[in-house]
Amino acid sequence: MVFLDSRPEQGRVKSFMVFRPKQALLGLALAGLASICAAAQSLPPMPRPGEGPGEDPPAASSPASASQSPISDPQPPATISGTVVDQSGAVVSGAHVKVTQQDPPQGHDAFSGIDGEFFFPSLPPGAFSLTVTSNGFAPKTLSGTLHSGEVQNLPLIALVVANSYTEVQVGLSQVEVAQEQMKIEEKQRVLGVIPNFYVSYNPNAAPLNAAQKFHLAFRTMIDPFTLAIVAGTAGIQQAQDHFWEYGQGASGYGKRFGADYADAVNGTLIGAAILPAILHQDPRYFYKGTGSKISRFGYAVANALICKGDNGRWQPNYSNVGGAIAAGAISNLYYPDQDKGDAALTFENAGIGIASTAVANVFQEFIIRHLTPKLNNRGVGGN
Image 1 (cartoon, rainbow, N blue to C red):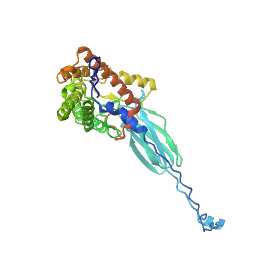
Image 2: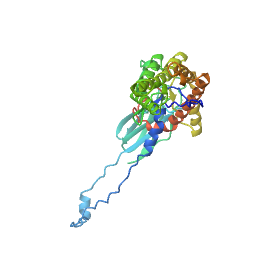
Image 3: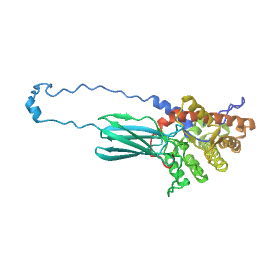
């Protein structure tokens, strides 16, 4: 967060939004990746038996000895991979995938990950039958033949919603499913460092209740990366003598750190917890990952102004917009008089916050997913 003055006499613009640390150092993280390269060194070929210095070539074996000592080469295993989607093309996580083979009789099980993918790394060659099942969908079965050493990538497996689906099941409640999914999201970090908690790679993730929204907000506010960003921002401000009324030294740095951290707390608490809990809106970005690049780009930009409600329906994102405006207005209580903004500046900063959210969503849709390590290949609860 860098605060510059938009007014000619002061030169400052404060931007308040839901604090997501990846927005702050996204450029630095990507620049760091571009500087990493690997050099491959070719190794000299190993000499064949009998071709080394001072060695005689091996004597050719006679046909008789070859026939008396037959060598049977073991057949290398084959692999199968694929992706499970629904009729709309959205990935289906947590689907049960079973491969059955008759010669010899055996079965292999796997579950589709958060990106809908599954993988069987070592299967014996021969005929196979693959069955995919998931709650709410009709089972789908495929069959084929695996050849020795073959790497078979199946086409998209589209599941159809079951015409009639009745099941009595004792399992996790919606709150418990959301809790397990949130635990996975709390482990998501770009490059293993930058928190990426407010993104769901499960399009049908269970909605968060009010307590879970506050938990995720507090988890973000006390994250070491959040504190590091605030500390670095305050240091830059002091070095450039921004908010000169705060003075220099430890006292001046403490005031700048407190003001910056208050901005982060206000933006996150209001825009990602208080308003979403009151308005029953989900503060997370739901990764699309399918469709044309143009449709995904439009989806990402639109999500700065719309969001999913707790009822699963899309609606105007009052939480994000209201959080930016409220955080800007509250900041006038603790910033120096010289740096307080009027109503026009507050709404201007809210617009900047919405635009930056749209840019961050585009990065989420096309880049961040590939920089976030896969932590769990088995979905929880969602279809």
